[in-house]
Image (cartoon, rainbow, N blue to C red; front, side):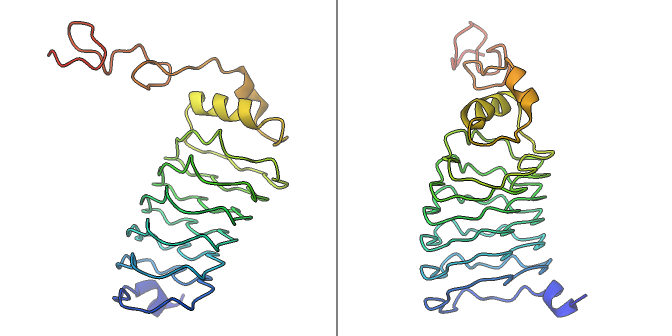
Length: 212
């Protein structure tokens, strides 16, 4: 066990990273790292391979990182059990690999439904054991995916999202759980899966009303 790596949590906010092309395993297994690196210039970075893998405390804001050149997100947040920061606006138009990206990232539930996955080739165990993840990513383009084993193994998706994703992906992803096709789940007006409209209806029966 590398104790120095495990205990690392220094201030790196002032680093000039404009010429960095790889963040390969940079904070891997740095169990206590959660410093501010929000202003890092990542415009030249092509790989985030295992960058925060097993960094179990990391949950800093990296929402503004420029990821337009990133090809690999292999294991980027694997077992980063605290991570749930907003990465919805990441530019993933160059990404080919999402292998293990959120595998065992047990807190992750950020909205990544709008990610550009046109070049995506691998979804191998991407969301395996991501037990909090429950987002509709049915609009992802998975037409170029060739590897997808266990992509949703023990994922936290509700039956509504499972059904929607299956209906959208099954022609391209042959090894999806076929049982998902049988779900008849739907979302009520409040957005609840198999709900009865009660969670957003006031005492007068008005949806999103204000009466108490």
